[in-house]
Length: 417
Figure 1: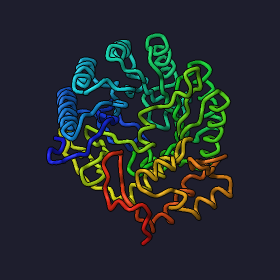
Figure 2: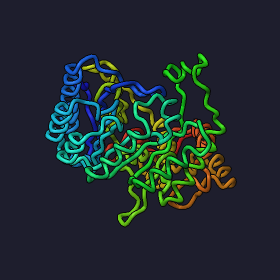
Figure 3: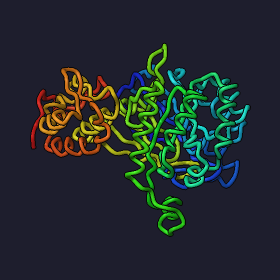
Figure 4: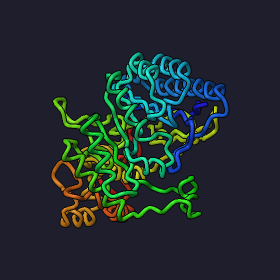
């Protein structure tokens, strides 16, 4: 049950993430929380309790002030498309009744092997405007290495069905695994010339400890990832997407440029802009404004009924999170926004680190923003490490987040430890 002892500051708007942790099989590289369900009954019970927790959380938030807008709703997992169709349909119907307003953007995740006409019809019926599809690759060698259920043929069949039957926007995930030269560029060429989705996420494969792939590599059953070769292929993939007319707007995200502008994913932009969001379901995370300051609320991985752990976020931690997340995008850090929230301009918070990165051509600094420049995103980890080391001596004057709820001492200048 969502913690009923919490008291929140007023939220005019927020995003909602719902985690359905069920998959038909665990992929070899996957480190997200997901399980193969023991029964359909367990799935149904978990889904029902997720809706109950969502209702409870929204009621708690509404007591602090009217929640007028749901900026975005994202149903992830796990693999939501693997749910029995009657369960998924009832879930989407229930969520629609619980929300105080229709979401500005509504996204659901899917895998190619579980795409069928009833699933796509349910998306249309419940006005799901974005479908996020885990293609990962069109190379069967790579798909086998990743432990994916789908083959290249299944990937194509799913995309053809979506093109013929789905009227919303399509997001596609690709992974650069570094198995064969040109693999990312070839997959991107197939994807953009034949199907042209609105959005592409291009990820580097990370071998996380404890995953089946990690175990296979450790035992010698699978070859290790050549990180230098992988990075080379990732850069080739970025170049291929930009040539195809996609805007590289975040470290791993590309959106097609059309008559309506750049079709960014609004839900993910909310994370990167550090807007408040509510996460419900086993393993989900929320960042919300409490009466005494920002809160991080983490759901346990207990199925079907998670417990929720609450932690306060200090102004110092939150300030650095804003910079780390903001710098991932082409918008960068909004200097006026950080001054408004924390009373501290980022250029004043880390003057040496920012000036050094600007001198190298990795950051662009102007009166309104600090953002990556050139190929600065390739070196973002190094840039952020330098900024974090300098900001470590800073105590922000206050934390007025997301707006209208001020915490701290109300000073107008930062205090150095």
